[in-house]
Amino acid sequence: MDALTAAGATVRAAVAQATPVIFDSAATLDVVAGWSARAAEAGARLLVFPEAFVGGYPKGSTFGGVVGDRTTAGRDAFRRYLQAAITVPGPECDRLGQLARQSGLHLVIGIVERDGGTLYCTVLFFSPGGDLLGKRRKLMPTGAERMIWGFGDGSTMDVHPTPIGRLGAVICWENLMPAARLAMYAKGIELYCAPTADGRESHHATMRHIAQEGRCFVLAANQVTRVRDFPADHFDSAATTTPEQVVSRGGSSIIGPLGQVLAGPVYDEEALLVADLDLDEIARAKYDFDAVGHYARPDVFRLLVDESPKPPVTTTAGDWQPAGSVA
Image (cartoon, rainbow, N blue to C red; front, side):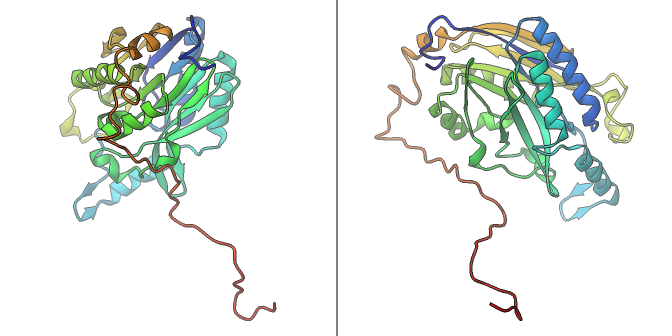
């Protein structure tokens, strides 16, 4: 029985609007441990962290890139960023699984994933038993993110059936992509996690719209960072004023399936947002609107989603042998 038909199910969920140790994954995992313990103490069964929390969201960096040229310093900045990223699977993933198990939480967290020489903005899902349920790579890096992050494909656009509901993630400005949202609605997403780096009030409006449109619970998570949270050489001095200048202001929230705000938004400070999610509200909301059901018009509109993986290199087994070999 899924959450939509499991009458009376209530889930306490939390969002960590926290500050990572930017470009230091090991230290950030200690931060994750602290917030996970705090969420568990609050009785949460689900905890969502922001985009690129482990590895760092390098807001304000140019990586020395301009059209037609890159600087030596920018290449070295990318080297540092690559070294701060984590592999999936890998030791940092193992530690995250341990933290999920120790806290008894479904853990959803944004990371910077290293795969060979390419980085991806990725979200990981862990069960309360510590198992890695899956990963979700960002389809479309925004603006200058395309200099440092590769593109995901449809193969990771999963929604995970869990005891607390159907769990998935859409990352930052992917939430402005109507086709991406529709694909997730079609998969029956109920707990729509939205790790982001956008702290504007307009993004909060988007989160409320998506909750209404998808008839789902939306958990939006953003970091709070200041100039002092970055390495001293990260910013051009002309672009900053004081160590306390806010770089990422948060704006995290939890929204119900009729667009009602259950927690947040909170700005300019760290916070643990907690709300009790009555999953019966999803069925009540579907009564008069179901974007992929009775309110859809498949005779007029159809969406094709390609979920096949797109590896850059594929090999096929055959009878080829190198020159000079003996059959």
